[in-house]
Image 1: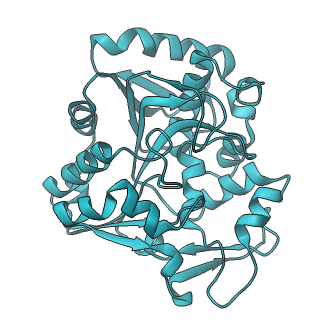
Image 2: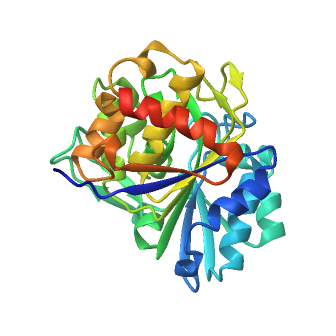
Length: 306
């Protein structure tokens, strides 16, 4: 009999975002973040409101919990794919929140060449390799918060793994080569997304599924209101749960087709050691009685379609 090492994924169904996040984070040993320099990646791909972008209440609750745990420094680093990053963050109120909570914001588009690390093209599907922000390589801890939505430009879904595209340079300063054009035109796009994640660790992921896009995406689509918040330390596990949720509520044919672990983002990420390798390794845990029914339904999908 094969015994799988389980990875915990916590879920809460709630009408209160901040209270739900606080309850989720109690399940993690945030003392690990005490005295640490933390790199934070949210989802600010465009200036469109949640669920296209990270909700400010989610960012505030997450930063607040990390600060209360004694984090030495928190740096939110972002590169928007649909708009000027600085303008996107300004419009969404991120700079105002950073002033209020005293965390740093770095616009990755404005980083010098020396602040990017070259990942060579060996053993991945990037023609020239790619450049990843050193912020996420040099931090003591990395935290990510993502949304729950589909992606109509080739990603199929944009959850935790896809959120990592924002830590990669579009163009290296002084160069004309566009790595994002390569990514979005490549037949290997979803594998390339997974391969970004192999290059840096993530210590905590918070998925905000209070609302979600079940089609189109990433900046618009038909909205549902699951009122769910999910957290884990494993990017593959949380994305598997995210895909199961999209299937539960009814989503695109591309997200719905085949087993979840045959979805290219997930399959490639599992192959290269980013996270769990099978649905059997996921331990989905409801936080309260109100969360038990949806947890049972998602577990059924994982058993049948994982």
